[in-house]
Amino acid sequence: MAINKVTKIGVLTSGGDSPGMNAAIRAVVRTGLYNGLEVFGIMRGYQGMIDNDIVSMESKSVANIIQRGGTILKTARCKEFFEYEGRKKAYANLKSRGIDGLVIIGGDGSFRGAKKFHEEFDIPSVGLPGTIDKDIVGTDFTIGFDTAVNTAVEAIDKIRDTADAHDRLFIIEVMGRDAGFIALHSGIATGAENILIPERKTDIEDIIQSLQEKEKRKKLVNLIVVAEGDDFGGAEGVNRVIKERLPELDTRVCVLGHIQRGGSPTCLDRLVASRMGYHAVECLIEGNYNIMIGIKENRINHTPLEKAAKMKTRINEEWIKIIRVLSS
Ligand code: ADP
Image (cartoon, rainbow, N blue to C red; front, side, top):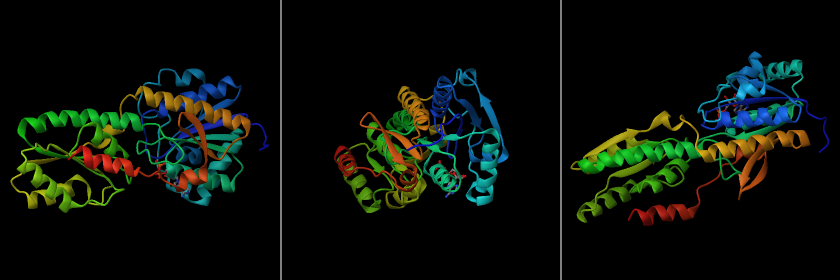
């Protein structure tokens, strides 16, 4: 693919934040500077592109951030970018600074925006999967998932202690939007008795029956982990039905919420972010663009942005079986 060589690149974080975004920004900035490029940080995702909120980045701009959650560039959801006029404004601002390449760190929504922008304007982009939800195709890892799931595991372990002390059933809701990966991984890792995920229809009769059977066997049931996008309406919905049907059970609901987005990224997330950030810049330099950088089977993998924007990874059937067997 022959294109004009990039000389000035912009990096932005967009959509939902995730721990490890700072490590990715750092890798992009340092790799860009190492290769003699000028690097700009675009504030608040696409909003900063439209508002011309763009700052020059030096090596020291990204010092002491690898261990920090959140994103120094801030992030936003930007309505104006859905409109052609908004994207045109964004393009004019990039052009006026001579920015000729973009690294977009975000989820599938941000990639849809990137794809649109590329179809209309001539600025090559490379995407990095920054999301705690993990449901992006073309990669085994997304920046932030490992930290989020470890936060959930730590919290659920603590809840189990108190649940056990009182012989209480906790119904715990974890994040993940319409994907069940956080619920699946944290539920298996904490030994939850039931794990409810959007990828599998929730059979409440089955859950009630298994709770009754376990009650008979005097098996303590302490934890049900529910993904926020589960078709039964999250933890509150599940608790309502259990309370109606089994009023003798002592139950509590706990929604873990935004703690899953924050905190210092794990070693894995820092490594994934650093590796992906480095490769994003290498790709722009080589003229390989409109792709998302992923890691599959420990190798760097390129997925067309169009595909990354459209398709989701699914939970493997084997895991669904494992949930059933291990909680019996
Ligand atoms: P995420 O990237 O975490 O999935 P969103 O779905 O909120 O987050 O998308 C982030 C931003 O990407 C949106 O606020 C919007 O500015 C831009 N975007 C998403 N979809 C489109 C689209 N179809 N066209 C243009 N911009 C889009």
